[in-house]
Image (spheres, rainbow over the protein chains, first blue to last red):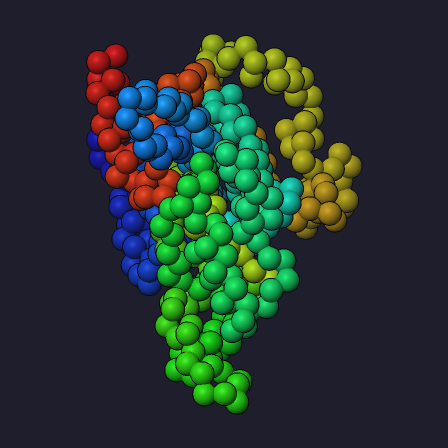
Length: 317
Length: 137
């Protein structure tokens, strides 16, 4: 058949789209990749139960029986893959009359190349921006209607907000990883550090576990406050000659997408937060039969969930 | 779309109103019924509804053609026809995932993960098993 078939045209355009897309894709590693543990996913969702195991061993007196122990069931965690996409419509006339269809397409797709990393950053920042809401937020809801049910709804696996003062372990003890009023200062960082390593370092059985904070996550507005606390050898704003015990104790990490300008988070990179990557970006270009208009679409699937609240403490949110 | 009814689940069919299209305004349910004026050719202009309270971009305004290719209205059991469905790999994967996951939640119960350690490597072990099971099926 002579001439260019429509299918060849759309396929050629699709190839060009990927070239435009990756050319404009932001190469700077996004912050969420450092904070969330990235895992690949090959299903609509991931689901597992956090292991709780058995208790400590007991000394067996001579001539007596071993004491029995029973495993406890812990919390179920669901992590669904969400779909993100966008569609843009070019009228048939625009495409046919345009001598430079590539230009029109390039400007559209190049924008997507810039926006995909931003979309992800905004999505993952919601875990921190909305983590302290007592009623929870949709970002924590991992239900897929008719397919998988997340029994904790808009809250995290233990039916509390991600940052809450009333987390309860399976053994029944109450814990807190949230201070609603606790501005970033030398004293407050010290007390939060101790809560993290001395109080919250317990598993669901209230047994001691090894937790080590290594990052101070904050909005850019707190950059200089954090540097004064973490980068001086002597205690800042003090007449005494005492050593600054917080010098380089954690790394400051700025995140532009944190909306609260005075909130800060003490935590562990890639700890307690999981991101799933189901499908990389897919671009499509096709013609609609009824209107003859052309459509370009972008589609990608990823998700995220909280797997353990103990790795993070929120302050001044 | 001659065999339009054949590919949809009973739930979807029940939710589709069976109103015959009598006038132009039926085709564009998001437009006002009475024209606000005429354009330079003398054709009536039907403004988009709800623009006062909800801002919608041009590509979000539903039209008849766009309704057919809407991505997120697909339901389990529906069959999709047409050029777009055949070629769109992303849509295929999405549908395959949901179909495979339907009713599988019970099976995930006995996956135990230590959440104080990296989760990815622990999940990988179960994924290998899951794949083997699919091959066996």
